[in-house]
Each structure stands twice: as C-alpha cells, then as structure tokens.
Image 1: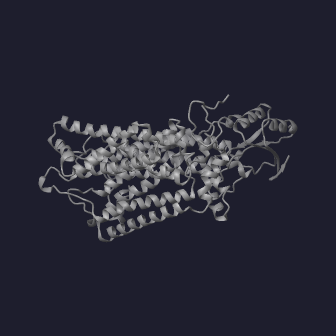
Image 2: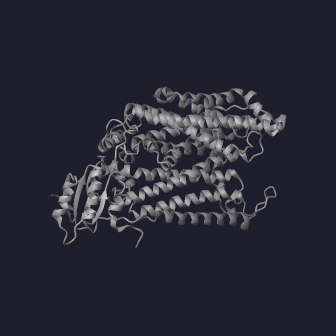
Image 3: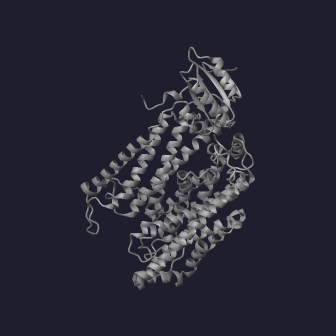
Length: 188
Length: 449
C-alpha cells in the first residue's frame, strides 16, 4: 500500500448515497446503525472532529506514532553523527583544554535536531497520507461541510437495499438525502 | 450515553450554534476592516518605521550607536531578546501543555497565543542577530564547513545551543500553528466571495474536506506535536538561561536559572496574551467566546507563575548569603540597594507583589483591571531581564572597570520598534486569519462531561 490514502479521493466513486446531518449525536447513532446493518460507509465529513466516527467507518488505527518514532531516531542519529564529525573527527577544537569527545554538552543540539526532524518528518507523512497538497482541487460533497453540516457518504454496491438504507438515514435524523452519480448530485 | 454538564460553566456563552461560530469568527475576515483595526494598524506601522530607522542607523554607523561598552556588553539588546522570547513561550504552553492536560478552555485562546509566539520569536531574533555587528556574516553561527570562513561551530557553547533552539522552536511553532489553521482556512475558503480570496485560502487549505479519516490522523498529529513542543518550550528557555548560568559572573552563575526563567516566560507570556485578548474580545465582539471564565483562568496562572518567580528572586538572595561567596553577596546587595535599586524594586513590585491582587475574584473577573495588570506584568518582566543583565555586568571583579549604563535613543527606538513588528503582524493576522480556532470551538459548544 502506498503512503497516500486512496480512500480519501472521490475520483473513482461512480455512485453514492449522501446524507446530511445537523446534529452530532443523531449522526453518531445513525452511522452506527448503518454500520451494523452492513452498509459500507465510504466516509463522513464533519466541520469538527467527532469522536468515535473513525471506528464506525472502520478506519484503521494510524501508524503516525511509529513514523514519528522513526523520524526521531533518524534525527538523533543525524545530529550525533554531525557533531562527532565536526567536533571530534574533522577539526577537534581545544577550548580550555577540555576533552573533545562525547559530553553532555552535546545534548541540547542533539535534542533540538531530534525534535525538528520528528515534527517535520511526521507532518510531511501526515500531509502525504491525507492527500493534503498545496493547490490541490478540493473534492467537496457539500459547501457546508466545513461550516455546520455533517455529510455521510455511502458507497452503493450491487445487492444493497437502498430503500432500507434511506429509511435508516431518515429515521436517524438526516435533514437531506441525495444521490451522487458520476459527480452529479440529485435530491431524493 | 452523553450528558450535558450541569456542574461546569459553559465555555462558550450566548447559546451559539456551529454556524454562529463560523459567522462571528469569520466576520472580520469577510468584511472590510473596521475603524479600530485601521487606527491600530497605522499606529503599528509607525512603530515599524521607528524600527526601520533605528536599524538602518545601527547598520550604517555600527554597534557603537548603542551604549553598550566593555563592561556592560549586553544591554537593552539581550534584555529585549529574553523579554520577547519569554513572551513567546506562553503560546506554546497554552496550545501544547494545556492540550496534553485536556484543558478545553484553551480552545478560545490557543490560536492567538500561538500567533503571538511566532511574532514574538521574530522580534526576539532581531536582537542577537544585529548584535553580531557584522550581520552579513551571521551565517557563521551555522555549522558550515571551514571553507566558508569560520571554523566549525563550538558545540560546548550555550550561544550555539541558542541558534539551534530558537530556530527549531520557531519552525516547529510555525508548523503547529499552520496545521491547526488548515481546517479553519478551509472554512474561510468556502465562505469567501472574491476570486483572489478563494484562490489564496484554497491554496493554503490544501484540499481539506473534513474527512473522518483525516480528522482522526489530524488529532493524533496534533497530540504528538504537542508532546514534542512541551519539552521543546522548556528546553528553549532553559538554553536561554544557560547563556547566563554557564558564565562565571556573580548574579548569573546559578543553577536556579532554568526553572526560574521558564516560570518567568510563562508569567510574561500570559501577561501579553491577557493584554491582547482583553482588547480583542471587546473590539471584535468575542465576549461569548473569550469569556470572563477564560480571563479568570489566565489570571490564576499569572498569579501562580508570578509567585514562583518571586520565590526564585528570594531564593537567589538567600543562596547568595548562604554560599559565603563575597562576590555573589555583593552582586545581590548591589542589585537591591546599589545605583539600579529602582529597577530591582520595580521588578519586585510588578512581578511578586502586584499579581497577588489576583487572589481576589473581583480582580480576576474585571477586564479593564486585568488589562492594566497585564501591562504591569510585562513592564516588570522587562525590568527583570534588565536587572539580571545590567546590574550583574556593570560592576565586575575589577572596580576600575565599573560603569553605569543606560540605553541610547537608538536602542530605545529598536525596542519600541519591535512592538511595531509584533503588532503589525498581529493586526494582519486578525484581518486575514481566524483569531479563534473555529473547528475546535464547535466541538465544545455542548457542555459535555
């Protein structure tokens, strides 16, 4: 699997059902009911983080913490090597006749380098994995999904009972329901 | 089952909905600038001009236009450096440490505090950079091969640690701030009408859609960045304190400096946050978002950190006496009762005595009074750095080199000018970016337990 999460793009989705919610609690309950009914929720778009939705849509736990640790080890190694090369190997400096070898006075520079490498390395992976690129075309299903509406996008597969899905959505508090087909949305 | 709290006060008052939050917070960005903004911005530009003139004069004539001399080789410049770096620290503290402690009240103030960090670090960096004198060879402070003109840098020197610490701190703070801004920039992108605005906010929102998968990773990345920033902020001011503490100058050579400086930084930073937010909540009509409860919480922190700093002042005095070292004892007696007594007692009054007024609820909940007190705190913290630097240097081991020092007009101009840099940046930020984190705030509109 590449680093980019392909599930985030709507480009290959030809047909979907879309539900719009106003209330966070109703959304969580309805999404949970849909997931229990075996409906495949492609994604849920919210203006703020709603906890628990990632588990409902079956998103796997992120590996970002491991990547951060890897970046930290890389940063630490790079900085230690850099100081050793400059300070011990290439041009040992005699300052006050103090020994030129590994000392605790290296720690601040090693620490700062580790933090810098971790923060930027991890953030770079975060941007890449989440398709966050400067100037990219944003694939919005509803202009209000960054304001006050919560959008559930359901992938329609052959054999899916659309009527029962729509009924769960309606009973679960969806204020609007739409069909998405080849980039065009029709109100149901 | 989720319940709304009946015990805690609401963090956002006025019964606001998510769309109200967007409308209220985005209003200054979507509308034309107000008269108050125009006046404030023009005034900031005037101060920025003062900075420009003072800096050009310094560069053209040389560092001799400052009153620093062979005894007091650090004067207003390093005082201002430590002052601004200290102010910057509260931003990271609010966003990172309070996030780790799950303090939701931070959500109304973290954005502007982080912005304050970045602008304050820019102001701070001006002083050591231009104190180099030959600023065009400033890159010698970086670890570059000998062929570039200098030897490899000295990794045993706290001044070099500072180069790494301040640059890392600035970069990581900027990254943390920007990642926090992305969802809100996307909100503005979807609200703004002009084509230029759509393109600009579209470019910086990086195609944000608010996907659940992205939100889950976004929260994790924020948490890890907060975890990184917390030791980072402690390390930065610790390193700044070692610029002094690793020397053998009486008054500087003390192991209490790192915690004492960090507490002072938090204290002064919260002072500046209070100054900015008391005004911003009134001028921008954000009283429902930055409530009296927020001011109350900030003033409690000011009181606690002010008391910690005060205890550090007294401990220094005690240790000077207890050490039996006559030079150390003289340095502190000279601080309190020597020619700079007025600076020492200004520091004590503003930092230790004045914040004790926050034991009273009225003082913690009256905005105009908090504003005055926040200025007092900042004045006190500037004097603290002046006292540490100047009173320790002006009388050293050799009485023949004892001198008096006061800032020249150029030094004063540079200091006032940094307020121009700071406020110009802050006014631009308030006009073009949301001052309050809309996305986070929307998640706490209901008072959940």
